Image (cartoon, rainbow, N blue to C red):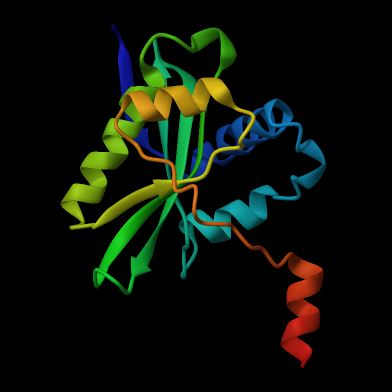
Length: 159
């Protein structure tokens, strides 16, 4: 099988945006995608980059991406790796590419001495939930995610 994972480079920004838009479409969240190439350039490759990405290629064609960043756990006193997005083209699913992308990130987390590797999944996405459980991942059902969006964040920051 000719599957290769490469660290995303600046020239790959259009691929990342294309795949994120496809993920948003799958999740019925296309209306929330406002990222531009300029924003991605700054976020992934700028002076204070805040995100990382890898791209999975099958027969030299991009078929999947994983976007991640590092956070910190005060309880264990070590960094964690947070998977923001994992997406494999629908026609390429079931070939083990998603698992290989996750295993690649797990190796990065281990190399960085991370104490955790976490991500979120929509509660209706049973295929993804079943896949993650098959890897030994455990749902954190007792936790609720809270979010401040840009408008609320700006309003709160004024107080």
